[in-house]
Length: 104
Image (cartoon, rainbow, N blue to C red; front, side):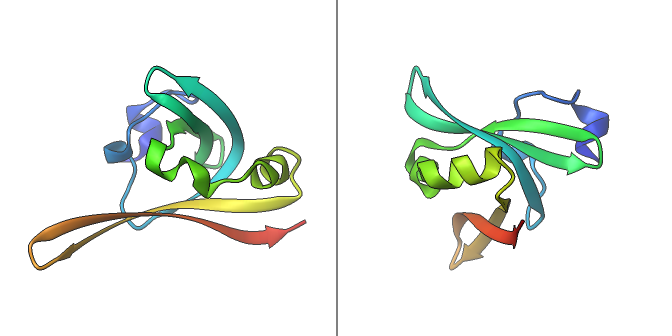
């Protein structure tokens, strides 16, 4: 089911709400302090006019540097957030990738 039918635009979602193996363009990023510690809140474009927000896990928060955040927010470069899930020898691995796909 599409995220736009499950969540209003701008809703904060968890990792399990995102589709596996689907790259989402990051449209905004901001460093925030939560009760659990410092992390990055990213806005992901799920469809043409639909966006959701996602708190990066603390262990992955350093994937985006301050320079990357500046590039995203000022449309200097475009990045995608890619959630991958792999099962190897009955163990579950979660891989989060931030990849640059366009320089403007």
